[in-house]
Image (cartoon, rainbow, N blue to C red; front, side, top):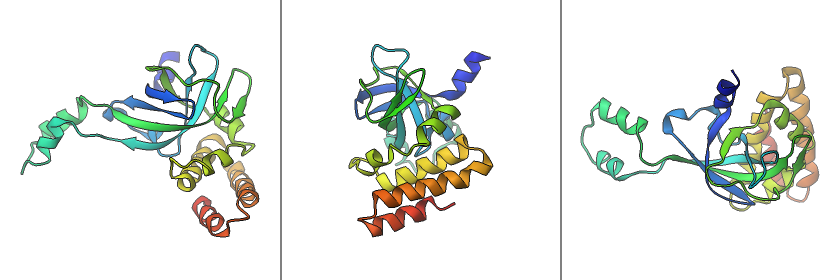
Length: 204
Protein backbone atom coordinates (compact mmCIF):
# COMPACT_ATOMS: atom_id res chain seq x y z
CA UNK A 1 0.00 0.00 0.00
CA UNK A 2 2.84 2.36 0.85
CA UNK A 3 4.54 1.64 -2.47
CA UNK A 4 1.28 2.30 -4.30
CA UNK A 5 0.90 5.60 -2.46
CA UNK A 6 4.43 6.68 -3.38
CA UNK A 7 3.86 5.67 -6.99
CA UNK A 8 0.80 7.95 -7.05
CA UNK A 9 3.01 10.88 -6.00
CA UNK A 10 5.90 10.31 -8.44
CA UNK A 11 6.28 13.12 -11.00
CA UNK A 12 9.55 12.02 -12.63
CA UNK A 13 13.30 11.83 -12.09
CA UNK A 14 15.81 14.67 -12.05
CA UNK A 15 17.69 15.25 -15.31
CA UNK A 16 19.68 18.36 -14.35
CA UNK A 17 19.57 20.77 -11.43
CA UNK A 18 20.90 23.87 -9.70
CA UNK A 19 20.05 25.69 -6.49
CA UNK A 20 17.51 27.81 -8.40
CA UNK A 21 15.62 24.92 -9.98
CA UNK A 22 15.75 21.63 -11.82
CA UNK A 23 14.44 19.72 -14.82
CA UNK A 24 12.97 16.26 -14.54
CA UNK A 25 11.83 13.71 -17.08
CA UNK A 26 8.91 11.33 -17.22
CA UNK A 27 7.06 9.05 -19.63
CA UNK A 28 4.42 10.75 -21.77
CA UNK A 29 1.75 8.22 -20.77
CA UNK A 30 2.06 9.27 -17.11
CA UNK A 31 1.14 12.95 -17.56
CA UNK A 32 -1.69 14.00 -15.26
CA UNK A 33 -2.55 16.64 -12.63
CA UNK A 34 0.81 16.05 -10.88
CA UNK A 35 2.51 17.58 -13.93
CA UNK A 36 0.32 20.68 -14.19
CA UNK A 37 1.60 24.23 -14.54
CA UNK A 38 1.82 25.62 -10.99
CA UNK A 39 1.92 22.24 -9.22
CA UNK A 40 4.03 21.94 -6.05
CA UNK A 41 6.75 19.28 -6.26
CA UNK A 42 9.78 18.28 -4.21
CA UNK A 43 13.02 16.32 -4.51
CA UNK A 44 15.68 15.36 -1.94
CA UNK A 45 18.76 17.59 -2.04
CA UNK A 46 22.23 16.18 -2.66
CA UNK A 47 23.50 13.83 0.05
CA UNK A 48 20.46 14.25 2.30
CA UNK A 49 17.44 11.99 2.47
CA UNK A 50 15.60 14.16 5.01
CA UNK A 51 15.84 17.59 3.30
CA UNK A 52 13.81 18.38 0.19
CA UNK A 53 13.83 21.22 -2.32
CA UNK A 54 10.30 22.52 -2.92
CA UNK A 55 9.43 23.94 -6.33
CA UNK A 56 6.73 24.91 -8.79
CA UNK A 57 6.33 23.40 -12.25
CA UNK A 58 6.58 26.25 -14.76
CA UNK A 59 7.05 24.43 -18.08
CA UNK A 60 6.33 21.03 -19.62
CA UNK A 61 8.05 20.23 -22.92
CA UNK A 62 7.30 17.40 -25.33
CA UNK A 63 10.30 17.49 -27.67
CA UNK A 64 10.45 15.77 -31.01
CA UNK A 65 12.69 12.90 -32.08
CA UNK A 66 13.70 11.69 -35.59
CA UNK A 67 10.60 9.52 -35.92
CA UNK A 68 8.25 12.33 -34.94
CA UNK A 69 9.90 14.60 -37.50
CA UNK A 70 9.13 12.04 -40.18
CA UNK A 71 5.58 11.34 -39.01
CA UNK A 72 4.50 14.98 -39.02
CA UNK A 73 5.42 15.18 -42.70
CA UNK A 74 3.42 12.09 -43.61
CA UNK A 75 0.03 12.60 -45.25
CA UNK A 76 -1.59 9.83 -43.19
CA UNK A 77 -0.42 7.96 -40.10
CA UNK A 78 -2.04 4.81 -38.79
CA UNK A 79 -3.48 4.98 -35.28
CA UNK A 80 -1.34 2.10 -34.04
CA UNK A 81 1.81 3.91 -35.18
CA UNK A 82 0.77 7.07 -33.32
CA UNK A 83 -0.07 5.07 -30.21
CA UNK A 84 3.25 3.23 -30.31
CA UNK A 85 5.19 6.48 -30.70
CA UNK A 86 3.41 8.13 -27.78
CA UNK A 87 3.75 5.14 -25.49
CA UNK A 88 7.33 4.19 -26.41
CA UNK A 89 9.02 7.56 -26.86
CA UNK A 90 12.82 7.57 -26.89
CA UNK A 91 12.89 11.12 -25.51
CA UNK A 92 11.22 11.80 -22.14
CA UNK A 93 8.77 14.59 -21.48
CA UNK A 94 10.77 17.33 -19.71
CA UNK A 95 9.35 19.30 -16.80
CA UNK A 96 11.01 22.49 -15.54
CA UNK A 97 10.76 23.49 -11.89
CA UNK A 98 11.71 26.70 -10.08
CA UNK A 99 12.80 26.25 -6.46
CA UNK A 100 10.81 28.35 -4.00
CA UNK A 101 11.69 26.71 -0.69
CA UNK A 102 12.81 23.63 1.15
CA UNK A 103 11.80 21.46 4.07
CA UNK A 104 13.12 19.02 6.59
CA UNK A 105 11.12 16.52 8.62
CA UNK A 106 9.85 19.24 10.97
CA UNK A 107 9.05 22.41 9.02
CA UNK A 108 9.15 24.25 5.71
CA UNK A 109 11.28 27.25 4.77
CA UNK A 110 10.88 29.83 1.97
CA UNK A 111 13.88 30.61 -0.21
CA UNK A 112 16.46 28.60 -2.12
CA UNK A 113 17.47 25.15 -0.79
CA UNK A 114 20.97 24.57 0.62
CA UNK A 115 21.90 22.27 -2.30
CA UNK A 116 20.24 21.10 -5.50
CA UNK A 117 18.85 17.60 -6.01
CA UNK A 118 21.09 15.01 -7.65
CA UNK A 119 20.47 13.47 -11.07
CA UNK A 120 17.91 10.63 -11.10
CA UNK A 121 16.48 11.62 -7.71
CA UNK A 122 12.73 10.98 -7.53
CA UNK A 123 10.58 14.08 -7.93
CA UNK A 124 7.25 13.76 -6.14
CA UNK A 125 4.12 15.84 -5.75
CA UNK A 126 4.07 17.65 -2.40
CA UNK A 127 1.45 16.24 -0.10
CA UNK A 128 -1.43 18.27 1.28
CA UNK A 129 0.24 19.15 4.59
CA UNK A 130 3.44 20.38 2.96
CA UNK A 131 1.50 22.62 0.57
CA UNK A 132 -0.76 24.03 3.29
CA UNK A 133 2.14 24.72 5.66
CA UNK A 134 4.24 26.29 2.92
CA UNK A 135 1.51 28.51 1.49
CA UNK A 136 0.05 29.69 4.78
CA UNK A 137 2.65 32.47 5.16
CA UNK A 138 2.93 33.68 1.54
CA UNK A 139 6.68 34.19 2.00
CA UNK A 140 7.47 32.67 -1.40
CA UNK A 141 5.48 35.29 -3.34
CA UNK A 142 8.37 37.69 -3.77
CA UNK A 143 10.72 34.99 -5.09
CA UNK A 144 8.21 33.96 -7.77
CA UNK A 145 7.31 37.54 -8.70
CA UNK A 146 10.99 38.45 -9.16
CA UNK A 147 11.92 35.34 -11.18
CA UNK A 148 12.83 36.50 -14.68
CA UNK A 149 13.08 33.05 -16.25
CA UNK A 150 9.43 32.06 -15.65
CA UNK A 151 5.99 33.52 -16.50
CA UNK A 152 5.87 34.76 -12.93
CA UNK A 153 2.37 36.28 -12.70
CA UNK A 154 0.63 33.32 -14.34
CA UNK A 155 2.77 30.89 -12.34
CA UNK A 156 1.94 32.44 -9.00
CA UNK A 157 -1.77 32.53 -9.83
CA UNK A 158 -1.71 28.89 -10.95
CA UNK A 159 0.14 27.88 -7.77
CA UNK A 160 -2.44 29.61 -5.59
CA UNK A 161 -5.33 27.90 -7.38
CA UNK A 162 -3.48 24.57 -7.12
CA UNK A 163 -2.90 25.04 -3.39
CA UNK A 164 -6.45 26.20 -2.75
CA UNK A 165 -7.97 23.17 -4.47
CA UNK A 166 -5.63 20.54 -3.06
CA UNK A 167 -4.48 21.73 0.36
CA UNK A 168 -7.44 23.57 1.86
CA UNK A 169 -10.92 22.53 2.86
CA UNK A 170 -13.79 24.08 0.86
CA UNK A 171 -14.68 26.47 3.68
CA UNK A 172 -11.04 27.63 3.94
CA UNK A 173 -10.40 28.40 0.28
CA UNK A 174 -12.00 31.82 0.09
CA UNK A 175 -10.09 33.03 3.14
CA UNK A 176 -6.85 31.69 1.69
CA UNK A 177 -7.34 33.51 -1.61
CA UNK A 178 -8.39 36.75 0.11
CA UNK A 179 -5.31 36.64 2.34
CA UNK A 180 -3.16 35.95 -0.73
CA UNK A 181 -4.68 38.96 -2.50
CA UNK A 182 -3.92 41.19 0.48
CA UNK A 183 -0.29 40.05 0.43
CA UNK A 184 -0.09 40.90 -3.26
CA UNK A 185 -1.50 44.37 -2.56
CA UNK A 186 1.32 44.98 -0.10
CA UNK A 187 3.97 43.68 -2.48
CA UNK A 188 2.75 45.39 -5.65
CA UNK A 189 1.31 48.67 -4.39
CA UNK A 190 3.92 50.43 -6.57
CA UNK A 191 2.73 48.66 -9.72
CA UNK A 192 -1.03 48.95 -9.88
CA UNK A 193 -1.33 47.62 -13.42
CA UNK A 194 0.47 44.40 -12.54
CA UNK A 195 -1.45 44.13 -9.28
CA UNK A 196 -4.80 44.44 -11.05
CA UNK A 197 -3.77 41.76 -13.54
CA UNK A 198 -2.72 39.35 -10.78
CA UNK A 199 -5.86 39.92 -8.73
CA UNK A 200 -7.89 39.13 -11.82
CA UNK A 201 -5.89 35.93 -12.34
CA UNK A 202 -6.48 34.66 -8.79
CA UNK A 203 -10.17 35.51 -8.75
CA UNK A 204 -12.19 32.28 -8.21
